[in-house]
Length: 265
Image (cartoon, rainbow, N blue to C red; front, side):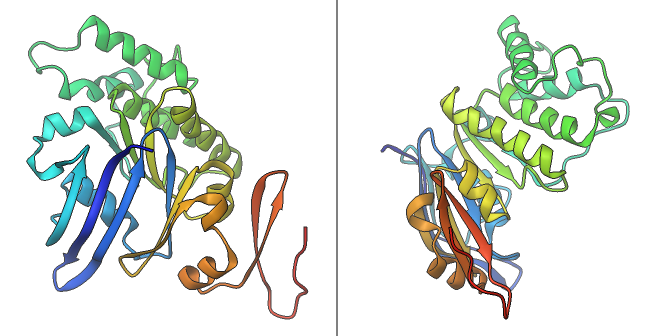
């Protein structure tokens, strides 16, 4: 498969504290890849490094073979959309106004959005199921609707690559699945390349094509979910004993409780 985004031996630190140390990873086009690992392992830092929000002290990050450091901010925004872990907007901002912010990389503030931009905005709202709600204040939406609104903003950016940092954080289980079904559809229906941080291994096995397992700023294992999520890798990365079994083609990961019998399919 064609590699679209690649990091080679990258290093990054917060002050004197190293966060990424010799991290190397490749992402395939039109695949949904989950970044998993314990808190502080470098998942969010890696996404920030790709976007240039976190300076790297070593290594190289390339987009189709070109260093991202040599790509201008607006040009990079046309190629990569980024959804951070926490998102906030003013109380007065409507959903339509939020979505319009996505087009800044394509038009000047004086010129404003084109007819094509407005079509993208409308399509993005339709894809996430929020058509007809453009005049509603973003902060008046439900938690699940707000998260879908931010995803619509990312979609309206019309970038080929989408980076998401915990897109289902703080959502109820119902909305976790609804949002990830939507994210999965970005690769299936729209051909997007998606890299997302997830904490739940069962959400990872349910929706991701590939997984990258991180520990202490390094890649411990990476590859297709079916080949990479196993008891040894989960033990090495999370320090957790688990039973993992296949149920109708989907891996189910069950942590072992001390004194309880092992779980079987």
